[in-house]
Image (cartoon, rainbow, N blue to C red; front, top):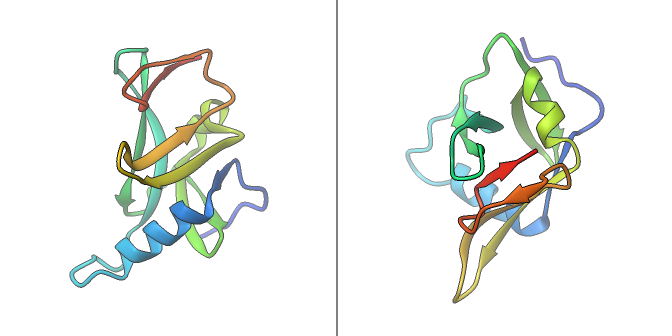
Length: 115
C-alpha cells in the first residue's frame, strides 16, 4: 500500500518541514504514522483543513515531500492542489498556516475556506 505518486499536489515550506520533523522526532511519537493533509466539511466558510498524523488508508495517495511521507485522500486533491502549508512561530501567530490558491474565500480562523 506504499505506492508513492510522482507529482506533489501540495508544498511544505522550510518552516513547516522543520516543525513536522521536530514533532516526529519527539519521544513517544507513534512510529508508522505519517502526515495527513486533507479537507472535511464544516467550519465557518464551508470546508476545513485536516492536518495531523495518521495511518495509511486504502484510498490514500502517498507523496514524498521534502523527505516527509504525506498521505492524502484521492478525492481531496481537487481542493488542495497548489496549496502551501507553512509554519509560523511569531509573537502574533503560532502554528500551521494554509495558503490555498483554490479557495474563493477564507475565514479569519485560517483553517476554513470555500471553493
